[in-house]
Image (tube, rainbow, N blue to C red; front, top):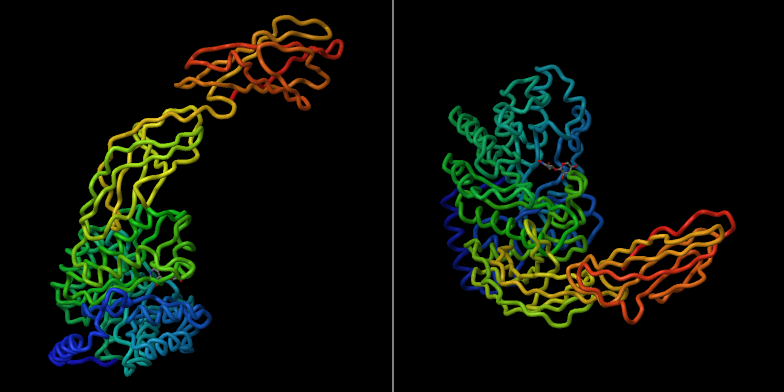
Length: 553
Ligand code: XIL
């Protein structure tokens, strides 16, 4: 590892800034990749990489090289990969990552030296003194291998040492060695590389909470004791359904004030599948806000995303029913979250919390039995992220279902129920996911379907004898809230029964199914109004069955 003295680094930064002015081709124009914009802000933008796709997929390699100036091995530097058996080291995956970074002028964050997970069984079964030596040996060999490598600049020395309430995690490390393993691990890492930045890393510590406060107290106390903790990593495994940690900037700053570097180490933002435009927009705000928090804190070195394409992400395997957590889709196409990261790095230093204006009063166009076109006066957005589109809701009570989304100020709603009244309103949304107020509502009623609207039918046997019967009346009732102009009743004849006559409906038979449509004079029914028809059937001598299963549509 190779570090510039801070004054030399500052001189070089100034020279670099001047060069950026002199050479506009290297400055960050709007279409530049993420890394160009990040570098211009003095930050890194990184991705965790997996060795499989790195070896096998050129699209993966191209984006990894072009967009990011920092990488972390998703798994290749973990203990089970580097020292599967005691003192038998395997650096093939780790070297592949480091070589890729070197070729592409990227820095590498080593992840991770001491963790309770992905650590072989042989470590976990050791006695206290043997475990301490094995830990020190592992750190010395792994960190030592890259100590002179210019790409490898930092390490997660310990990972996830807290439980979710801010107590110490009762891992095999803690249970065997007590809390002292943490200080010992940092000292061993410093001994192996005097310049590498040494980090403690954890999840659910992005906002201010019991766990992040426990982390804060531990870091402060370790540093007071002279333990070389230089940096705190905030993993950033977020989920849109759990809300955004709004105090993230404040939290990063309180750690920075302890004198440590801070960084977002494993950012991803998952959602309940399936993905849709509104979830994508919300996710984009999370990415934007994390990047902006890091930009706002001088001691924040950068943001590493835990992968970059939904094609290769740990989320679907780990969180049931969730996914789409990254900034490119499965086909390597950038998502709204990519744009959010890009735009934040490119200079949007403010977070867009301003919703678009409320849309005007909608009006309806063509309304059929199952669709309706609706148009409304457009909204405008001044918050910076731009107008992204509109959500159209049905006003219904406590929760108003989303009927459709549009990127323009009109929509054709489909899949509606025939002969039903709808009251709908519109909300605009911007690129940051902010929603406007509700527009006024517009009401319309879908037309009757081919068979009329919502209705019921009940048949009463008026008269029967050994070889036949009369059903009269079959009562047809409009149970909807608006008038219908036609109805269709179906019912089933028992086997061997034959229709011999009918009245007040037009009737056809197919197999045992009878379909009765309204006559010309009794199709129109106001809400709650009824009409009737009747029919006669012959049946085998002695059979006592009658029809069943009357349905109306
Ligand atoms: C995950 C990897 O992404 C998966 O491929 C692997 O199967 C399990 O570990 N916190 C960490 C990371 O510090 O190392 C984890 O990575 C995700 C949670």
